[in-house]
Image 1 (tube, rainbow, N blue to C red):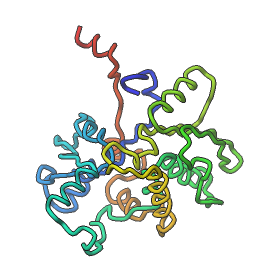
Image 2 (image 1 turned 180 degrees about the vertical axis):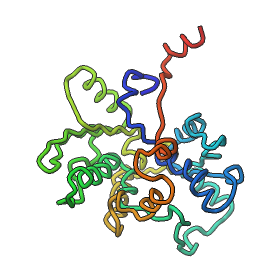
Image 3 (image 1 turned 45 degrees about the horizontal axis):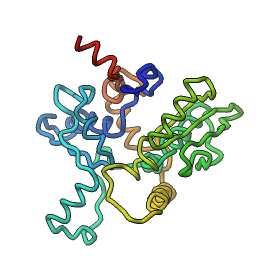
Length: 274
């Protein structure tokens, strides 16, 4: 959007990406919990996406005067390192994630597949907006690997029009239709990679033509097996707000968890250099 459709910047959610949010909390909340200086924490992100390396360099990801992310490894790079060091990864004992922020939900897992961010958001939006329990936890309307998917979601009698697209060609097609006024939506999710993060440029290569389907199914299984499947019910997140952030959209929450976007189009760059 910053480079091709800068006029749509104000339509973007100001929420940082998961990498952006977690890294900001690592260099603030987590550092305080451990009683260490943010400068003494070397934070490495393991990501399926090569674009996360560029994101880590953004000035918006500086917290307390230091980079929130110190290095980014793709999942493929991590796999190569594991092989290089001859680590018997399959034989390593299972361990729980470190606290704080060691608890995740099914909704969090869904972020890895196209339609997943939409579904996770709808689960929370429904219950926050209505104060009622979701009649169904799964939104099949936004699942699947079709390039562009549209749906009308009923939120306690109110119809919410949503659209999901994955892959840059599909993203451009959907955006052009929106700009032309051919379609209108309340909420749009776009992922650049085919299938979402499961098809990220940093993921392990596969000759299996059904690999995206299998990875998507694995994501849905993780969600199904989770005890907690809604983001707003995560006790670690509740504790984070109680102890540190105060409430959603508080000054501290906005400072750490939200960002802004700039015009990075060629026209803007030429003007800036003139």
